[in-house]
Image (cartoon, rainbow, N blue to C red; front, side):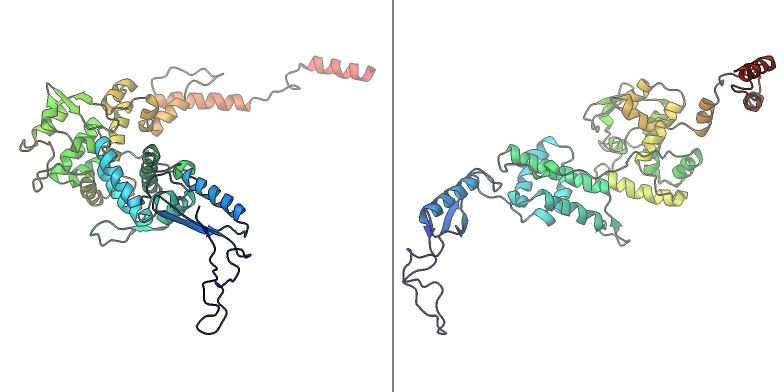
Amino acid sequence: MSLRKRCSPRERPTLTDGAPNPLYCEKSPRCEHHWFYDFRVNGRRYRATTETADKSQAKNIEAKERNRVLEGRHGIRRQPDITFRSFAETYLTDHAELHKRSVDRDREIIKVLNRVFGSLILHEITAHRIEQFKRERLAGKWRGHKTTSAPKPIKPGTVNRELDTLRSIFSKAVEWQKLIANPMAGVKRLKVDNRRTRILAEDEQVRLLEACPRKLRAIVTLALTTGARVGELLDLRWDAIQDGFLTFLETKNGRMRRIPVSPAIAAVLAAQPRVHAWVFTNARTKQPYTVNGAAHVFDRALERAGITTGDVTLHTLRHTALSRMIAAGADDYTVMEISGHSSTRMLARYTHPTEERKIGALDLPWLGTKRAQNENADDDDASTASAIAELLRKVGGRQEARTPDLRVANAALSQLS
């Protein structure tokens, strides 16, 4: 037990200025002053008043408080305290670098998280503090490295990716017994409508290709031909193109995907020099181009092409390619084999019917009308419209449908009654 009273008969009765010393007590420890507990667990000190002068009650209070700490109600077990910054580094080396392809992105996100949570002990981070982090990020601004343009507001999708990384860190802390409970358990992701439906029109596609520099033009052409993600194209190696097939090894879902090399694909590949291991290699760094670097050049090409709607990204190329495959009549499973989707539900995001196809679906033979088999589609539309208009002009209903004789008979019966 570690109980003590702050007062003592050995203290000086008065202070240097002559005032009474509050810590002097002639009867201590048998006085009415409160007992204080003071103990350490794993190097951390816990001390507070028991708010009672009864020593037996103070012992019980101290024992209960010690059990609370040892049982982890303070958010710790019997391990030493660990800061978020320290554990995040352990998370990167012992988990992300071994099992995640997104380790580079996680490393950048952790730099952001460390600015907010880095100095805090793991068990001190609460769900409320994480909600405050969400609010602060949405209200903040972001400026790219070495950029002089105006800072951009943080988008909800970016905040969600940061929350996903934070959730993964806390999950590993619980799994590795560094934390009792995950504070992210009750934290919800922000609602984001990321179902892009933008596809390039034919004239936009032509202008974009003309505005792209030579290397980017090859990447954009291949993306519009294969429907592959730009990241998959940038990771493409020459040794993955064999026997008439193009193999994507680094895919989003982790499953290898093979597509046949069509004449259009072969023409793009034939124009690329086979100097390095990757098909698209930065001549200066001898490494493949990054998606961020390609996106920067792509944005400038959009400006030159006059596409300033703000809703066109590199991923729009994939939407455009797959949407045109479906519009051309390719069945869903063929497109799924090309795109790498595992379900038709995911493929539905790329089905964008044109206005003409919608009108054609609505203009099916209407019930109650007999459509003439004319060769001219305009004559068919006119006949259908006139038939519906004629039907609407007809008067009818319960009273008008009766014959005159029946109405006279009903009137006579009503008079007799």
